[in-house]
Image 1 (cartoon, rainbow, N blue to C red):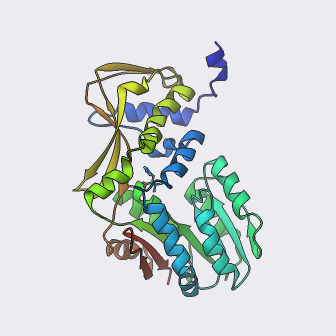
Image 2 (cartoon, rainbow, N blue to C red; image 1 turned 30 degrees about the vertical axis):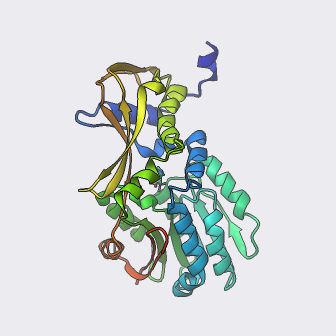
Image 3 (cartoon, rainbow, N blue to C red; image 1 turned 120 degrees about the vertical axis):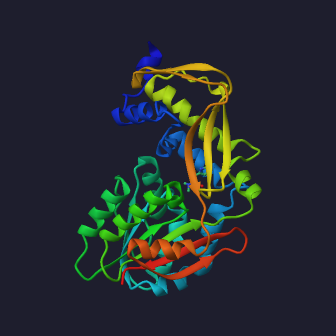
Length: 322
Ligand code: AVI
């Protein structure tokens, strides 16, 4: 009774996605966006500090070393929109470089209210930067930002941290085409892409010995229990990180350690899992350095700059709408 009262109202979208994903015939799946509830977002912040996960540090280093050079190639961005701002710490470096040249408006676009609040706290009081947050899905937020500017004011879109890698390649291309469709000549996109590296290094980045990534992945089942009245026994699942060489991606799965039944009342679902069967929860695609140039062309941009970190293969790519 108390547990029922404490449980949050069931989100119909979450329930429908869980139901659709867990009843897929060949490979069960759960959409990776549901990894980021309040607990998952904190665990992701912890992942970014792990010695094995060099991605965030490489992303930040490149901004620290090259922000001025990046900004000098962008036609004066009066507006900066960021897709998935997170805490906003990395963005400060870039906004400081822009604010040295001129005043700018910054629009973090986030579906997580907690992340948006953290970003507003971090960046809300910068000189020469005014901040307006959008709690919306990426494209919806971007369209709203594009609609509020004056005709000749340029917009720079930031999509950092290799979040593009969490989309399948065809979906990433389509997403980038849609980003392009909201932009006009002289607008730019700064895109972070994690590059292919030694397989062992990649696996360790997603299966760290401290078990933080495992907790991040397993929290998805805990979230289903909390929000949808599921009865998943977390100790009967384990975190798996695999390198899929054909698709050039790390895949995270939750593997059932025994034959078991799971019921999720909020999704009107009961399923039987075989021993060893997996639920696929996330893909992180990795790129070769030339790939962003081809992606830019396909989406209708021109790549005008690329900066690669020397310690951890990761690229910042600057694209321009000509
Ligand atoms: C947010 N995204 C780019 C991270 C990644 O590397 O794919 C999410 C993550 N998953 C496990 N570790 C980190």
